[in-house]
Image 1: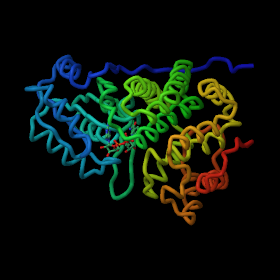
Image 2 (image 1 turned 180 degrees about the horizontal axis):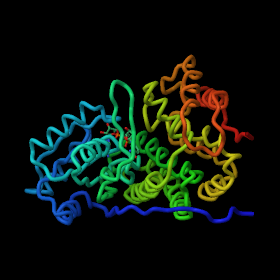
Image 3 (image 1 turned 45 degrees about the vertical axis):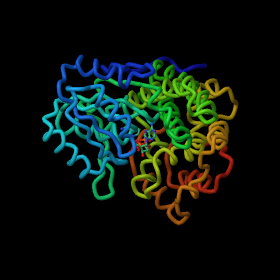
Length: 360
Ligand code: NAD
């Protein structure tokens, strides 16, 4: 028997352009469409080539390139970027890069109210959300604000051709995590479920091709399409145990973002599985498996991704502290979150045990 339909769905106004070469061929038109005349291009230190190509395509509409983005948007990095926007007299921003560059664009939008265009070069999905993050004295604060939602997203698979395979795989699994948690979110809807299923199918199907031939435009296009759908799931719902746990491990214990998502996802899903049978059924269909946690772990491991928290530098002695910290937080999750339960899943992920779907 299926659950009776009962949902609220809000569609946000985001224009999406998806085309090979679009970062340079479509971005100028999108800037003009928003009636912008002097945009600042923001990027991370490693994404400058693509950022400069976009800046060159923008010609006189470009007020400069600011390449100061850093992971988790430290406040001083946001301060410098806002200063650069003011000094350049910019009337908008174009963020070119991964979640860090887009995060910096969002911080600028939050402080100045200027419109943002996102040109993503990873699969992490920030471009489809109104979630911002800022890190001050080692503590990351996040929030939702419609002013930070990019007004337009330009997806260009060509930009991702040079994304190294390890980063492609882990940021692809980061995208899968958005779809997984959206499926059991309290604000899920039938549309979110459709996007999640198709997003998981596209991403999981594309990643082996990306790993085998990183320059394959077809595989890259499918992966970026999956990233769009999974990012849309993230933007439409409230995340649970998995994202909160990654947030604690990244924020307090300094673990790397996409890699932590990759190691933990099979274990957090195994932990929640019995309390979210409909979500698991959708994922089983998308991945064509009868053991979703195991299939997720096998996929990432086969493509060379890290498999244990120990490999990421987590200390065994810190597992209990992380579990207690998480259990003290309040967030929606299909299964009740206890410090003991979280310690169990963290220990399994630390050791790299086979994930087993648990009965609460
Ligand atoms: P990232 O943006 O930090 O990029 C990782 C590295 O890859 C960087 O050194 C970057 O310069 C490089 N890189 C990016 N694209 C490249 C390309 N095409 N070729 C070669 N190198 C490239 O990584 P990410 O995983 O995309 O983003 C992580 C950050 O985004 C975290 O701070 C996370 O919290 C945030 N995030 C936010 C949201 C949201 O909704 N607000 C969603 C997902 C992630």
